[in-house]
Length: 311
Length: 258
Ligand SMILES: Cc1cc2nc3c(=O)[nH]c(=O)nc-3n(C[C@H](O)[C@H](O)[C@H](O)COP(=O)(O)OP(=O)(O)OC[C@H]3O[C@@H](n4cnc5c(N)ncnc54)[C@H](O)[C@@H]3O)c2cc1C
Ligand SMILES: Nc1ncnc2c1ncn2[C@@H]1O[C@H](COP(=O)(O)O)[C@@H](O)[C@H]1O
Image 1: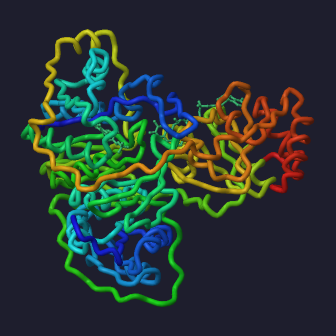
Image 2: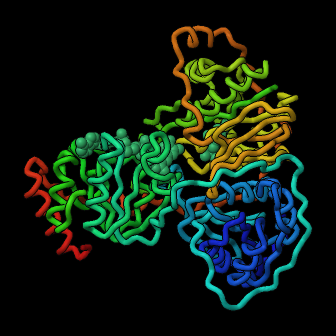
């Protein structure tokens, strides 16, 4: 792919209007940002508030959005944009994967900064699960970037939405959706987050953690095993490389060992506190304050010291 | 039904050393079957047993992924046979390149109905390879799969989506990536490990595969050890919980976070 259209970048949207993170990155490398939207019309209309032009592939009906990925890739490749930006979510990655396959360009994830230098896109991103960072300059094709989705763009100026007839792969039909019973959680907005891990002995003991969270006016989060596996908390509550990335003022890790895959999700927290009964737990090497002790004693004491009560 | 399980042989980056300049010393890493890939092995075995099919393991990477230990670790997890592409030209390959090689190997295996993969690999952990590989094959690729069962025309697939559990009627061929908790994988027993030694292994030469050339070149301008890893913990002894708690709260108040 030679002679890219250096003034244009594309965002690929997989049914989720939270695109401010995508658009922000797309704008750092090009003047014009075009969105291609797979999903219902209201998603396209919402995205139109944040970009310069929207290409909408029509109502998907019972077709899974991944079936539109090859068409998205064709549209994007034909425009030869300097960058293609999508959400680092499973749905976003399906679209980015098709773009990558069509252009034989790598998908760069863990993106920290993006800039343009000497006509090349320069990306600093985390590699190997976040243990290291690398800065690369790209040449020969688009910068295909998986980034944090961000928020839904605020209303206001609305870009034109052009409908292009959808041409999905004829391979799958959604026959049923069983809605989730549990409400989602918005950890991203919380200034204090209390995360709990596998050191918690029973689901009923979550009350202790909720009491502490209430005393610090925070939200409850967890490590992956508590949300996937035992399912004591909703999947949207777990923090880490495969879960939520948060940057609160204060993160309290209770009975979490501090594995890399968890800690990556809180590396941007201002202050990290750990409570763990194993003084050699790796989390103590990655926190600002730590209490070495049993959560069943330390958490109630902490809640009381903060003026809260256990429930 | 002919099922390929794409799995990765990789170390946990937690065990690797990052030098001050941000380069990674991989010498101390102990590679293994990537943490969540046994879920894909289990789904594949159950489906093959129900449909009278075959399960072929497939992994691609640098030459070091092909050792007797690595072969045995994969073959003892319910595979019928194993296919490898092990070439140092693939050391440090990005997800697009790995996916291109996987797709070429799937084409070389021939007649494949289903490629099953894990949620995300232990070292890269982006959940990208299976979706890119699907596109390289021109097949549908679906992630977040929690269940797969045979259906009249193809497969019935359940997925965990933001809206809830979606049930899909899916025609083959297709690429499916499982969630980490889709099924509980069985633990290989002594019998499985002994049987593994007798199962066929085929090594495909990278040069013999039809793999598209990468279009983008990456020039590395620098590497760094991420900041944030250098928090200096102030530790309080929790054997006196009340005193530890009040010290901590005091410290947090003076730090201005409460
Ligand atoms: C590809 C990949 C992606 C992953 N993604 C994520 C992710 O996004 N998020 C995530 O969280 N994990 C993720 N993981 C899993 C991760 O590697 C760890 O397995 C997980 O984070 C461990 O959770 P934990 O700390 O709660 O449990 P453990 O590691 O079991 O730690 C429990 C801790 O509790 C302490 N403890 C026990 N009892 C008490 C007590 N009474 N009082 C105080 N402390 C106590 C123990 O000392 C121990 O340190 C991923 C793994 C892989 C391979
Ligand atoms: N080199 C590889 N060979 C075979 N399968 C792989 C390889 N890399 C990744 N996969 C599969 O793709 C999944 C997601 O990997 P990743 O995109 O690296 O997070 C893994 O769980 C494997 O099932």
